[in-house]
Each structure stands twice: as C-alpha cells, then as structure tokens.
Length: 592
Ligand SMILES: *[C@@H]1O[C@H](CO)[C@@H](O)[C@H](O)[C@H]1NC(C)=O
Ligand SMILES: *[C@@H]1O[C@H](CO)[C@@H](O)[C@H](O)[C@H]1NC(C)=O
Ligand SMILES: *[C@@H]1O[C@H](CO)[C@@H](O)[C@H](O)[C@H]1NC(C)=O
Image 1 (cartoon, rainbow, N blue to C red):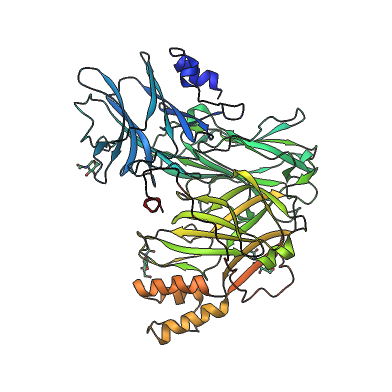
Image 2 (cartoon, helix red, strand yellow):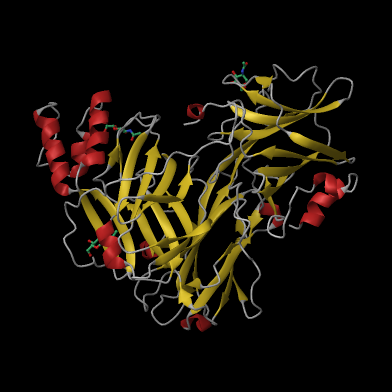
C-alpha cells in the first residue's frame, strides 16, 4: 500500500508536514498494514522511523464507537497491557490517552503521556486517526517495542464514557482482538524486480473453508514442465483474496524432497486427515513461509533459492492455516503464494542451514515450568569443516519451535569466544507467527565461528514432560538461516551426548531413587522421573554443562567426516554487554 493512498487520505485535512516524520528518507516512507479483525473492518497501518526510533500508526475503524483501545501486551493477553485509547465522553468530546490495563483488566491513565501527535478524521462510515509513539517511551507502564514478534491487542465499546480510569478493557468480550505482527520491519529491502521475472502462483482452488476455528489445508502441486530447468526465486509474497483476508493466518510452501523420479499424489485436503497419502509426508523442506502482516520476501541481489532443475523432484506442497474463530461457513478461498521466478540465474545459489537442537527425545522439558531453557550449538569444528574459507553471508532467518516456545535467540561468536552482534532474537516468539525475515544487517560467518541457538519454553499448562521431536506436541529449537553462497553444510545442530545422558539417568536412579534404568529407552526414562524443583534445576544444569553430540551434516544427509560425539560446549569468553536503554530516569536493571 502506498503512503499517499493511505495516510494522505486522512491527512488532507492537516498539512502533510504536520505528520511526516522528521528526516523521512526514501527508505523509510514505506507503509505497512495489517487487518485487526477477521472481517477486515478494522485495519492498522504503520510507518517506521529508525533514526528517531518512532512508529507512526494510522487506525481505521467503523464509525459509531464509544471507545477504542489499541496497544501491546507481552504475549497477546488483553491485560496487563499498554494502550492508546480513543474515547468520547458523554458530552461528545473526543480524547486520546495513554493508559495501561492492570492485571485485573482495569485501565489507568499514565502519568507520562506517550501517544503523541494525535489527529483524527471522521466520515459517516469511518473513523481514521493517526498517532506516533517511541519504540521505548522510557515509561515503566508502557510496553517496549522490540524487534521480532509484537502482539497487538485491541478492544472497543459502543458506549460513551464518563471517564477512562476504571474502565475494564476486556468487558466487551466479543469486541476484542489480537494480532501478531513483525512491527519493526526491515525498511531497507529493495523490492523492485527485473523485467524478466515472471509469476508462479501456487494457490489453492475454491476451498470451502471449514467452519471450525483451526484448519491446516494441504495442496500438492506438480511444477510446470519448464521447471525441469533450474530457476531462481527472486521474491515471493502472499496472494490473498479480499474476502478471506484475516482468515488466512499463515502459509508455507514445502518442497517434496525425495528422488527426482518419485511421483507424489496430488493431494488436496485437510493436512491432518486420515486419508492424506503417507507419500506427501516428504513435502517438508521449506521454500517459502508467510504469516499475517508479512511483506513480500525479497532475495538479495547476489543470490536466490533455486527451484526446479534436473535433480529437483517437481512436486511442492502449499499449506494454509485458516483461523476462523467466528466459525463462518461462507468463505470460499483461493489464496496462496505468488513466487516471482526466472530461469535467468543470479550469481549464486542461496542455501538454508539448520541451527539449534537435533530433533530427538534426548532433550526434554519438565512439566509445569514457567521458563525452561534448551540450547543447541553449531561448533567451531563444524563451521571449520563446512564453510568455505571466505565464509558465508546470512541475510534471512526463520526461528522455529512448537507450541511451548516463548523466546528464541541465536548468538554469534568468533573463533576465540568473543561475542559478535546477535544473529536474531525474538523475545515474544509464538509458533503461530512464523515468517522468514530479512536481517536488518547481513551477517558474515567464517569458518571457526560459533552459533548458539537458545530457546525458552513455558510448560505451565502441561501435566507431563515434553520431549524433543517431530510431533506438534513435541518441541524443537531451530533457526533456519538463509545465506549465500550455497555450501555443503546443511545441518549444524547438537543434543546432549549419549554418554552424559546415560550418566544422568543412572544418577537419577542411584541418588534420587527414580525408576530410570539402562533397559528403558530415552523417552521412558524421562517419563519415569517424578519432577520437583530440585530435579528440574539439576536437569537444567546437566544440559548447560554436559558434553555434546554434534550433527554436522551435508546436504546429501551424510555427516562430515570426523568424530562428533562428546564435543565440548563452546566457551563464551567475552560476551557482549547487555543492551542499554536510552532513558534518563529509568534504572537499567528495571529492564534487565
Ligand atoms: C474485566 O473483564 C474480564 C473479562 O470479562 C474479567 O475476567 C475481569 O475479572 C474483569 N475485571 C474486573 C476488575 O472486573
Ligand atoms: C500424561 O501422562 C499420563 C500418564 O502416562 C496420561 O494418562 C495422560 O493422558 C497424559 N496427559 C497428557 C495431556 O498427555
Ligand atoms: C546427520 O547424518 C547422520 C548420518 O548420516 C544421520 O543419522 C542423521 O539423521 C543426520 N541428521 C540430520 C539432522 O539430518
């Protein structure tokens, strides 16, 4: 959407310069947008200014509101949360205030007002308003907008208010919503494509969206014949029909990575249906990932992900997650992903390396934990074996866990244990919001460097232990990094060494009286442990100190030659100092 079309519409009443952010450059005038309600009746537009660390919002809501609160919360709950509230008093006077909802849902005006530069325009059908807010307002009652996932929460009421203080934000339980967005997007991605690039639409065909809350829809395609020749993906983007905007929650396109001649059934249907052909289970190597609010993903000038070619099985699968909380039965959808491809190749192929934890039950998360941490290592020895001497350049990253993942970070170290800037971090991670994101700064990784991927899980609502593994109820800790030039290294992950785990189970039996035993399998041993605070603490410490079993694999699926058992955990000799807030009145440890 274009700035002029969106913001100017509202601002024709005010002078343009009143709103334009100081120092707007050609790069920063991009406008992003997301639908806040499934029926698309409430929309949010925003524009970023990284030099002043502010975001300008424009909100479109239907006329006839009494109050409308829009804000942020840590994980998407309506409270506690930080809001900017538009409201009308009983005399018809419109106000716009910075407030927070406490942990009972009750609003309080903030002493420090940070919802700035408010402007409003109303028509008979619509209300449009804009305001500006700093990423970090230096007010402890406000949310700090960070890179990664942001949970936007809203609610509204029809009635005019006597005053704002004391209002329960979630009192009108139907008129309340939450969307996840990557608010602090990369504004430096040049989206212009060369003329010779053409479209490849991988879209489903008139799906009658089931009237249930959650549907995963799978659709297998065979690539057209011309893809027997290798192509490059220059860009991809969502292709969503207007009437299903808001219901299409996220989409992925997978390559069915198997023998070139292998035929895959052209299955169309629920991904979890019993009659889904088992052969389609090989369709799991990610080619594209889109989530609500994500802009087109554009490959860098130097390199692109290949699609097609002699050794490329021609089948791919589209997976669409429909989110239909209103249980509508009138939606017929033909959405999907539009690839922009060409057989004219760029200089290099891009590739994907998996960092993090091996998919194995050797790592597990005890039940009832507010926070438990698992860490996967890509060691110096593996990057020395796997990367070319001039290194690789990482330009994108997709973080991945299953349902209990809450925070993911990949830290980067040189060969001497000195920490370099973090590769990627999401402090508000949600499995329901996965996209491949372009890094704001490409990262060079050289042979000998170390990448440490750490995931924090919340298992408070799980009665049983959660195992590492493939199933959605199991857990993963992965960062798929997108980089060039393509190398042989495809997997650089770890788990606890077999020996260390054996010793741990033996200890639990001998010293803690647990019914762990060498005759049981790994999962059964974990399940045999009665978890208490001290045992959880001990497991956390064992994971932090035990030797590793490394998976340093090539794209052929074989390991790089070497002995990968009982590797040392890479030492962190010189960590980065914690980030500093640019706030005068806030003690830094309030934040850390
Ligand atoms: C506010 O409303 C929510 C949802 O109806 C409710 O759970 C909460 O207890 C209410 N808070 C107060 C203080 O009444
Ligand atoms: C937890 O484990 C018990 C005993 O194995 C089992 O009966 C129960 O179904 C499990 N609960 C969940 C939610 O998996
Ligand atoms: C790595 O290679 C080994 C040996 O071929 C294999 O057993 C293992 O499953 C591979 N790991 C991954 C994550 O592909």
